[in-house]
Amino acid sequence: MSKLKHSVILGIETSCDETGAAVVARGRDGQGTVLANLVRSQLKEHAAFGGVVPEIAARAHGDVLDGMIAAALHEAKLGLDDLDAIAVTAGPGLIGGLLVGVVTARALGLARGLPVVPVNHLEGHALTVGLTEGVAPPYLLLLVSGGHTQLLAVNAVGRYDRLGTTLDDALGEAFDKTAKLLGLGFPGGPEVERWARGGDAARFALPRPMLGRREPHFSFSGLKTALRLEARKLGALHDQDVHDLCASFEQAIVESVADRVRTAMTIFRARVPAGQPLRLVAAGGVAANQRLRAGLAAQARQAGFSLHVPPLDLCGDNAAMIAWAGAERLAHGFPVCASFETRARWPLDEGAPKALGAGVKA
Ligand code: KG4
Ligand code: ZN
Image 1: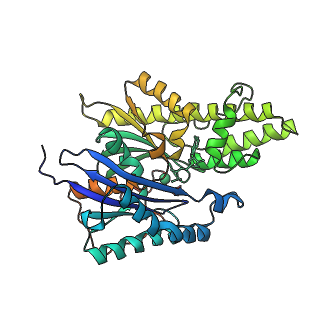
Image 2 (image 1 turned 90 degrees about the horizontal axis):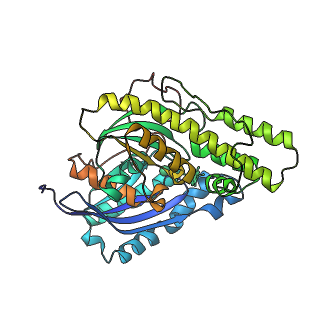
Image 3 (image 1 turned 90 degrees about the vertical axis):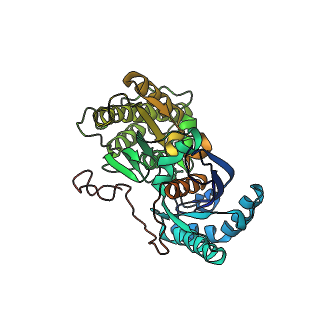
């Protein structure tokens, strides 16, 4: 039993188009419990624009955040006096939205004398399996969301090495752009997945980007272009064409990602002391994709890794993961500074040499 004290953390998430407020407890044994986890999507506000509009996002967060915090505390049957700290996403993301969360957290912290822990949104995704399954580092992490596509060695809380990243689009972005091209809704990932059901994944010979490359980087723009050309060749698209295009697209993604993960597994395996369990964790919104989960499960089985993926409601953006990352930082003795920056860009592996995936999305 560790000497760590039991803590109750309020989490706040406003980095993109989901407003989140959550209350999470961390026991002395390191176990996490979600007491409340509220998420409000801004889908309707952005739908007409086919993407997230930063100013609309910031205003929408501002409209609902205080009420959501009150509702989360109510659901947890707790008051502000029961909290030990507030964890807030301080980056990366859209600055306007981030500031709504950070200013709210700071004001509450000041009023109640509570420490405010700035959390990297990516660290929230990276550590979620600790909350859901008690899985602790080290593990290999595939982080796939709307803005990020990375393979990271999670060595310990706060210590991350990026092994691979995307040279162009993030994986979620590739799904979103493909959905737009095919006239499907936004966000595109769930739409493409829905249309891929009942589709023939072998009908279109789409490329498997980066297959066999030595470094586990990703690229999706060529695949997106190939799909556009196939769609153009067909002219008017019938429903079955869209089913088959989506299925073929997903299959190409799964094979490309599984190959990149295989390469990262080799690198990761060489760094982990013999006898340590080998674990692969998938996180981020795209990890909700069932075909991708199945592909990763097969790859993990083949390589002797166990696979861990958060449940669907904790794959996408949420504040429980932010509260948990804040709790983990406190429990592991990271200092809490009274002042901190709000950052649009904030790589998890800040000290990494520029050469690894330099100039690409962090
Ligand atoms: O992690 P997330 O909720 O927000 C970011 O931090 O970006 O990820 C959102 C992304 C979007 O691009 C969305 O299209 C994608 O995740 N996504 C999916 C699925 N559900 C969400 N992509 C593929 N299949 C899905 N089922
Ligand atoms: Zn995210």
